[in-house]
Image (cartoon, rainbow, N blue to C red):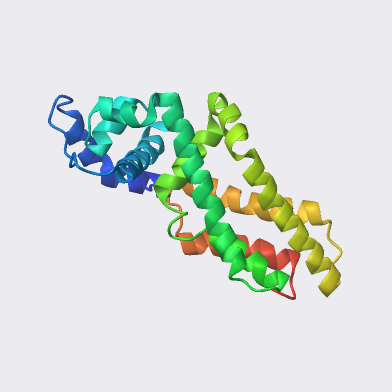
Length: 228
């Protein structure tokens, strides 16, 4: 039987979840002496894992506490409620994603083709393109109850990313004589990445991250054949 990229990840964590769920009253597994920042990071990572396995609506504070190896009350101490926890996890994912692509762009140099390459590669960086993170993003995108939250927390970041791509595509036209509509081209580049992310999550027997990037690069070559 073939498994998707996400299913292979989930299978590797299934035993740990089953063991921790057997005794909800068991003593916490994690040290109690962690500082606030470390503890919050631990809970955020546990929530990402739970979102990847259970989805947005089925993830509970109890699930997160079990995954993190701490008490239900300690999760609420740091995040107050499930709604606030899910909002802060989305903020974390959005900030992580934005910092990743902005750093890649800053290191790419001035050539627009190098900047496009950097942005495309950034979406498949090891820290970003993990099964848990992709599935968590899909959880926020996929359920209607999470869409207002997504728009309120991520709308400005998405607009900045898109405006950056549009500006780069305009420079590809100006410097190299392409005649593409820059807004549509930027949209297509973004959709190609997001589509491959969804494909990795949903297609049985799905492919590697390297193959995913190469699929997106095929589209970039079709748009800019002299540069990719």
